Amino acid sequence: MSEERAGLLDGAIAPVSNVKLFGHEAAEEFLARSYRSGKGHHAVLIEGPEGIGKATLAFRFANHILRHPEPASAPETLSDPDPDHPVTRQLASGASHNLLHLHRPVDEKTGRVRSAITVDEVRKAGHFFSQTSGTGNWRIVIIDPADDLNRNAANAILKILEEPPKRAMFLVLSHAPGKLLPTIRSRCLPLRLHELSPEAMDKALGQLGLSIPADRREAVLALAKGSVARALKLVNYGGADILDAFDQMLAASGPSQRKMMFKIAEALSGKDSDVAFGFFTEHLGDHLAATARQLALEGDLGGAEHFARLSSTINQQLGIAAAYNLDRKQTMLDVLGAIVR
Image (cartoon, rainbow, N blue to C red; front, side, top):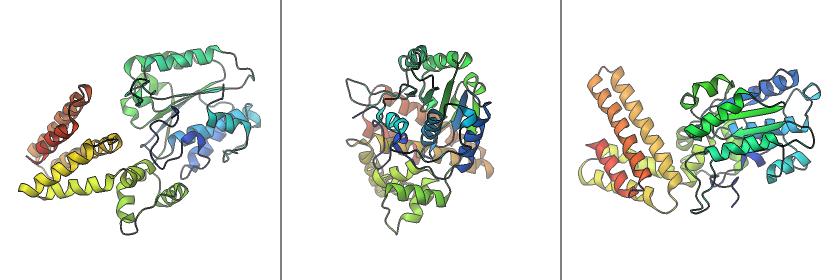
């Protein structure tokens, strides 16, 4: 499996190969006009929830730039990449000398995607810019996402952003820009993308051919929150069933509640359950935060503080379990036990 395919969700199209983008027409128009003006920023921070098309937009814009290296003669709109165009083929095959895609690498020993983008990956950008482009074209770096940069890697990227080479473009993706170094954010032009509308979701899921049972479609789309990635996790990774079990656990008590706890823990500890586990722990964090906010609004400050502390404790517990590779089933039973206690 190539590194571009590693970590790609089942049923998804790799952003570099995706020639369709739905729901972000205003952002596309802004990027095209900004580039054509010749006054575009050398670093754009494309931010928004996971799975809404940020990486697809970045590759789409990169394709546009490399096909039209002179801004003044570039079209005012981004068009669907032509699959037969040499630039599109080079990007899709990873053979382009004008684009570098920085993302979490695959561990050669385990074959699994690493937990962070390391400084060794960022050093590739220094080597990338040190080479002279045979075409005199732009050099584009896509950081996907910058949230995955560890501290040393983030500082290394910052140094390049502070003194960018000529005809260099950085497309910095982020699911949570508040977690980035303020100095990185300050050197980028922010471009906020929002959750997909129902119409855009229908088109995007239709392109993927995602089959959702008619009796569950409305519920799945509501839970997806305008994110294609969430929809894929709900349907192709059992996410919807896990969330149903979680709701049943919260509503139950005694042996029935314990049964649902074991059901969830077993589903999240099986082989190839990493995606489902990450999906559920994210949902868990959202659930605890929402519960704390609701209790605060109702005037129950003690209850709000309890859930806020519980969220912090569980995050620490999950971090320790991951660091020491502790038994995932027991970890999840402990976490769920703390919630219902």
